[in-house]
Structure formats: structure tokens, C-alpha cells
Image (cartoon, rainbow, N blue to C red; front, side, top):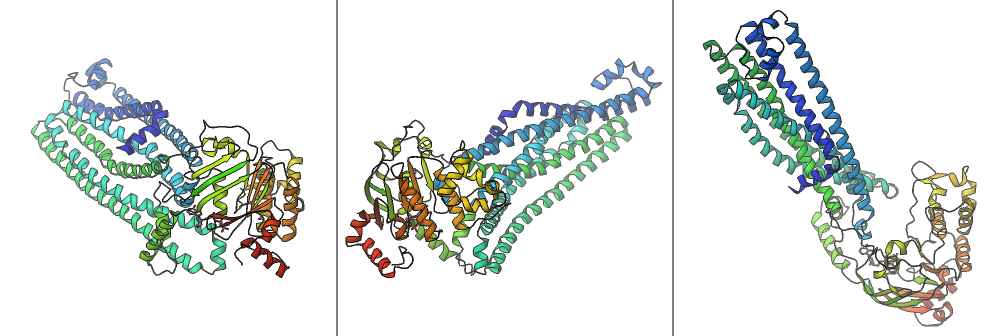
Length: 639
Ligand SMILES: Nc1ncnc2c1ncn2[C@@H]1O[C@H](COP(=O)(O)OP(=O)(O)OP(=O)(O)O)[C@@H](O)[C@H]1O
């Protein structure tokens, strides 16, 4: 029922067009049924001389056109009436299909827009738990399943109902006993179709989920193809794909089997029905109980109602699929959007930050959408032995650990314009601090103040516009380098773009490309190295000219010299903006105003390089290691 309501909601904006389409298809059906009636009246009255009793509208038309005697000598007139009827049927069917297609396309466009808008407004946690391939499948394949249903099948449901109503009305007016004989096929087919529909829904859910797993695997595989190649895992991946593909084929095969069973059985019903009407009708015609014209009408009508009745199977298949797809799309649409506190403060921040006893655990099972593909991937331990159980245990264990605090009572103050280096072993919570500061996760305990406003009371959209955040894994969009950098500030001029690119030490690289800033990167363009990508991402953040910058290990792919140059630039911008630099490289953060050392989700040390290099602790140990090694950089974790 919910799925049906959702379909109505999807159609709502184009409901009048759809109603017009239904009206047009009903008129088309009316014309279709009028044809046999004209032939019946011509046979019975014009050829066999029966009087026109006026009980049917066709009789009345014949009387208006001049009556039996007049038309007998002008048989071309009933023939012309037939031509008009056929043309009318064609015209109205065309109009109905056109309107239904337009209404469906319009509704589906709105649905796609709504889905994309909704996905954009999902919290960060949605994406960390999402299976990209599965989400793409919901936005494309599932949406298309609904489009097909709305465009072709929904109107057919209306058409079938109208056809049955008109046919039954006419048949009972013309000859009651023959009309009763035509009835058994209707409940029989509807009853059978209902069971068929239930089964289709069940099997299509399996098939759609199976397709989701296949899409997810494909999307992940294409993203990680370099790892696959580097580890020589092609055979394993091929086997995994073939297994999923086989599963998809199997579930789709079940659907085909169901359809074949449906067509076979309803064919049998239909033939039985035709034989029944034909044999009884012929006996009654021989007895003189029915006229030849009436028999001809009934044979035509039986065929005419059989087709849409049997079509019910196809309609129900598509309806079952559409309901499943609507359910999968609703899982996304029903999930809560990110609360960006639009009513909160939108003022410009100065870059003053205060963490007060902040504790945080990543939310468990944060994604409300069930991703069968992700579950299957989690249960696959990669040794190809199908040992799902151990895999499932691993997932449960992982879930448990996710509930533990990853930040444990973190407190610090940062003044506007300060540069803070954040250092700590892997998993100590460095990125988590930046995540919280960017408002990507709520649910922390304690307080985070920006100036004197708690983050929870700030308008996140307005606040995030004041952040320059360079993520650990820089992502550039397909398009020109200029377009990518301009994402930071849409109004930026070419001079600004060149300036920030120089500051990020990437201008000379871009200038060496034939089309310099217009060089297209990504799928259809130049592939940048890891370090070049990082630098373009840094330029994109720098062009924002904001009071707070956060660099999450963003200089890691750079050589020591470039790293030093960018650091100097950041330091020379001192007092312009507060800057947080997370790094594993000691040299990257040694020049910061203060350094925060994180261990196991707690701040173990905080101070200037001078202070920390003299104090007992992780920083000093690392610093001494560096001094002893003197060559190269010391990376935290290599201790
Ligand atoms: N989205 C997430 N869901 C659940 N747990 C997470 C998530 N992101 C990180 N964690 C966990 O939180 C802990 C801290 O992670 P965080 O990314 O903050 O560490 P980090 O110090 O930045 O590490 P690295 O130096 O390797 O980047 C880790 O144990 C990690 O497994």
C-alpha cells in the first residue's frame, strides 16, 4: 500500500495529464468496441432485414443516417462509419500513449532530481556506510523500472478496467446468456494474476538485490583496479564477478520461469473460454436463439477482452518490479537528512576554537539504507573459500569496536591566526578532530566552540563556507583544472587561480600542459600524479580565502622540498587564518606555532616545538630519531 501511495506521489505533479491520458485511452477503447457493433447491425439489419430496435447506440446512428432501406442501397456509408471508428481508435490511442509518456517522463525527472537533492543532503555517515554501486543502481535502474511502469503499464491498468466495463455492459445488453458464458475467464485470470504478482514481487526483490551486488562489485572493482593489478588478483576478481553474475542470472531466470508459467496457464484459460463461447454460440445460432451478427460480436469481444486480461500478467510483473524499486528508493528518501541547523548563527568566524572535554564514538550502523551488497562484501574474507561465517563475525567485531570512544576527553584552545600541527600514531583520532570541527558528525559529548558559539548552534552550511578543508584523499572532479580550483570560489579570477596555484607549488606543472589551466583531468583527460592532485586540492582550498584551514595529511604525497615550500607559504599567511595541519611527517609541523600530540584519542602533549622537543614524550623521541637519522623525514608510526 505504501508503494502504491508513493507511486501516486511520484505522479502527483502530472496527475491531470495522466487523467487526460486515461480519458483518451477510454475513448479509444470505446471506438474499438464500436467496430464489431457496426458489423453486427450491418449483418442483422441491412443484410438479414431485422428491424433496428434502437436499444444500442449503433442502431440509433443507423436510423439517423437514413434507416435500413436507405442504407441498404448505400453500403459505403456503414463502411465509412467503420473507417471513422478505426481512425478515432488510432487517434485516441496515440494521444493517450503520448500523454502517458510525457507525464511519466516528467514525473521521473522530478523523482531523479528529488533523489539527487536528498542524497546531497545526507549526513557524512550515510556515505561512509554506503555502497556506491548500490546507490547508483537505485538512482538509475530502479528509477527506470518505475518509469517503464508509469509510461506503459499504469495506463494499461486503466485501459483494461475500462475495456472490461464497456465490454461487459455491451455484452449484457446484447445477449445475457452468452454474456454469462464469457464471464469465467475474468475471475479466473484475476485470481491467478494476483498469486503471480505476489511471487513476482518476491523474486524481483531477490533479482534487484542481486543486480545491486553486481553493480557495487563492478563500481568498487573499477575504482580499485590498480590495487587488483598490483596484487595480481585478476583471477580472484573474475571468479567473484562470475559468481555474482551467475546469482543474478539465476534470480532473473526464476522471473522468466514465472512469466512462462503465467503465459502458458492463461493461454489455456483463454482457449477454453473461446471454445466455450464459440461452441455454445454456434448451437444457439443453429437453434435460432442468437443471430449471426450477435455471434460475430461475441467472438470479437471475447478476443478483445482476452488480450488485456492476459496482459494483466505483464502489467503485474512490471507493477511488482515497480513496487520493489519504489521500496528501494524510499529507503533513501525516508532516511533523515543532515541537520545543518539552518536557524543557527551565520556570522563570520575569527578562527578561535575551543574543545571542551570532547568525547566521540562513530555511530554504529549509521546508514538507515540496507545495502545487501555491502553486507556480502563484508562477509567476504577474500580467500575465496566462501567462509562467510568468519567474515560475519569480523563484521560484528568491527561494529562493536566502532562503539568505543575514539576521542576521550579532548580539550584545547586555539587563537585566531594560530598554526597548529597535529601529530599522532595511526588511528589516534587526528582526522576525527577535523571531522568534528567541520561539523561532519554530531553526537559528540562535551562542547566545541567557534568563537563563543557552540558548533551545534551554528548554521553548518554558512559555517562550512568559511572552511578550507583539504581531505586526506584529495578528490578532483572530471573537468578542467581551472574548474576544479574555481570550485573553492566561483567568482575567482584567472589571476587569483594562478596565485593560489603558485602558492600550492603546482603552477609550473599546470603551465607545462599544452592547455595549461584548461587541461581536462579525470576520466577523459590527463591523469595527475598523487602529489599533483594534492597540490590542486590545496589550491582549491586556498582560493577560498577563509578564516579556518584544515589540512589532513595533505602534504604526504609531496617531496620534502615541495612540502617545505608550501609550509612556508602557509606560515607566511600567518595571522590571516587559523590553520590546522595533520601530518605524520615531523618536519611538516615542526614550524607550527604549537603542536598537539594525540595518542589513543587523548592529547598527550601540546606546546611549541622548543617545548616539546625538551619534554619527555612521543614528540621528543621522534625528534631525536630524526636528529640521529638526520637524512630524510621521520614519519610517526615508524617509531
Ligand atoms: N567512519 C568511521 N566509522 C567508524 N570508525 C571510524 C570511522 N573513521 C575512523 N574510525 C575509527 O576511528 C579511529 C580514529 O580514526 P582517525 O581517522 O581519526 O585516525 P587518524 O589519527 O586520523 O589516523 P591516520 O593517521 O591513519 O589517518 C580509528 O580507530 C578508526 O578505525
